[in-house]
Image (cartoon, rainbow, N blue to C red):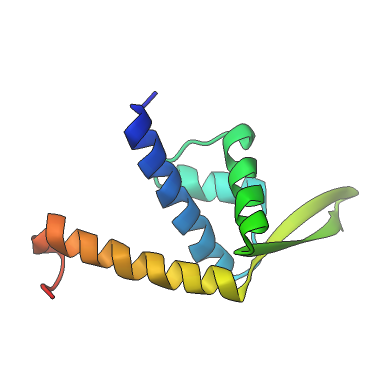
Length: 108
């Protein structure tokens, strides 16, 4: 288990990642767990679903329920607030990367 400060940072990365994928199209929990695992974030439902619910309460995502193979699945869709949040987070992340790892990007 990472130290609390690392966990907090990583959960922020997860939120940005969720918004990024929701901006590309509808997402659902299991799909995001699999996607995030490809990037080293091995989250269970007890971690990911509260993040999705938080982003929904915040107004960054909205959800719709659909029946898939006889089961109800909740899909999440980015909102305008979510797009604005993703845009701001992207700008800040790029600025930070340029400062802490200047060899990876252009200087501002």
